[in-house]
Length: 559
Image (cartoon, rainbow, N blue to C red):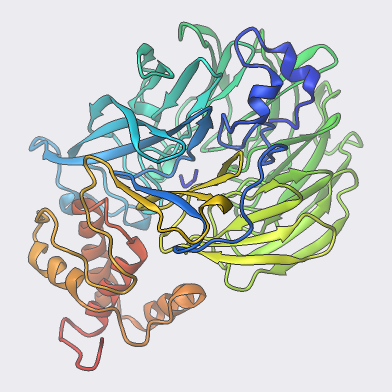
């Protein structure tokens, strides 16, 4: 899941206590070593990213990343690490073709082509490739949601080792120069509805935590981070979840806190024993917990809304008890994780542009489902630095807000890429990964033309918004020629773009007949299968919708 694709606002003492493997606080604080940052809550205390940017302002560099991935880049020292999965197009004739497979929810198909799973290391100042490692080649046993990827879990580092989790494809540990230290095949999971995997690993005191909740036997597993050996493993009574656990030391005991549809559970890091549990969340948990003092805040937003502040001092089952500090049942996120910044908890409703800010201590709403204008749909999680909150939409729009009890927009910024991944921040830089490019944004870049890097395996040319795409390797499929013609054609004249995208699509889908919906679904499924690295999925989908709307006849006047 997009997911998609997630640590406690750690005090200095806690971080120093784990220096046996993880680096000291100063090193953690100045980097972005995991997908939710130094404190696992979206905040950097040392970063000073720009407030404003565009394609022609404050872009230090942009690098075209081959393949597809929704994982967040991480930063350590002078290096940026990115995971990606590349569809080689090499077909296994023994597997059913996607078009011959049964219909699944969201039109999801299982691949019959080999994918290469890569770890990329880029120079932080230039965006150029330092090294790449092909972790493995594999035909994934399940598919994924159209907005997800086979590289949705974010890497994590302790400053010595880089841990890269590709879900059922495997777990790989490298040193920071790209030497493979160990790898583990933890077996396949079976995610309900083939929605895809996306939980990221968590790391603390030389131990690596993997949560695998799925449609069969779910479990949590603790590994020795140096060797990859299993230290303990516990079964879980849960269905699909994608929430990365929080790890926090409290009263001499380190807890691993894992949200679930049935129960939020806290495990002892060293033994795996259950410390406490609490029901009350809705289904499909994705947002990761954040810790405020002696409480942990957990939330979900699928088929209902729930947010609760729970005591770290709890023992046993505290469901519906007076030990729950506060709770609310409105405005919580489905995919994005919350931002906890100086006593304020920021989150959006579902995947929508409706922003809420709560007092983390009391749960009192300070800003309640504030509409964000151009920001209408988001998978990315908010981040915070220098008294600012950054909220990024899927269409490439980012709002810079003041971290305050009142709603105050400082700037509205836009990049010409679709963005599902969450930002990373370090120094004066902010990193945003789009469908096509990884952007490094910095005020020192000013209006200089940014450095553009095209990595091996992504020789696609840059296209302008709304323009025809240059010729690429021919697509293979029963509708290959038709899809190539559609792809090279113009966008609909009445297409509004930006915040008008989803309402426009929805309005036409309502007008379509069952036959038209089937035709659209068939063409889009083939497009996703044969061209997974398309630069802009939204644009491609709109062009196919345009074709179906016009029954394949060219409409004069479009430009």
